[in-house]
Image 1 (cartoon, rainbow, N blue to C red):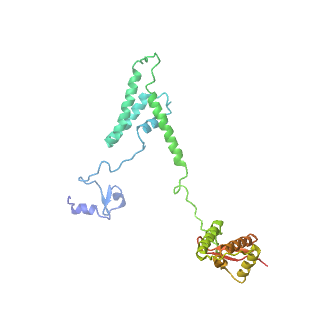
Image 2 (cartoon, rainbow, N blue to C red):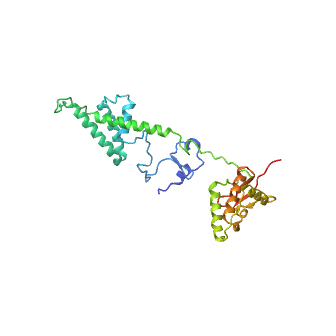
Image 3 (cartoon, rainbow, N blue to C red):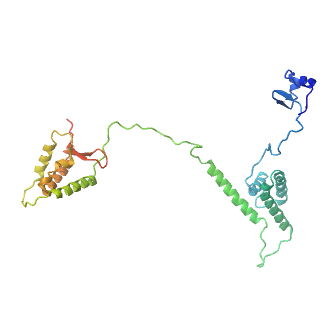
Length: 280
């Protein structure tokens, strides 16, 4: 670093008036700096400003055409190519790799322009030759349609960007809600009782007159004064399947007449039977 004399230190002291400090290039550690150091290195890409950003050669070409209201079906290739090459020269000065695909499009524009300058040659079948700009126009129109469609999609509301999903907390009722007992649950419970009843079979042959109404009364008496009775306890397994069938039919008849309720605390839980509550 170059040494600074005492007089120069006095000139760079922080007690300088504002008029002198205003012409300083920068301030270093609180002191004004009147000229940049000779050994200061600034990278060439330290600061770049892009006035226009394009997504590729077609995007740039379409921008030049639409900006000057050119007819896309009758492109003035000379003017467009001249403006296009001026932009490509700016890209080449900063990033040669990025300019490669733009140079390819520039070569295509020059080729199309040269073909337009030559006398047209008729095809073998005698028809007029196709306009050399036709393929380029087709690509530009397809690209413009895709670009407009992408812009419309981008305007659609997006979760997390334009709106948030509403969340509402609903307090559950403190009253327990017991699941309904379905016919499938009753069938499974009934089959389970029948399977256990087969383990307690008697070989006594007798004929017994069974009444559904009588067993309805028996079931009601057994439930009298009881808050809940297990479904299985209402069957007299030792009396055989016939009595159990009549008892089951009696329970179904009582349930149909709303004289008893069949409940279950949760799925696959034991089934309970109680007398139906009748308000006064």
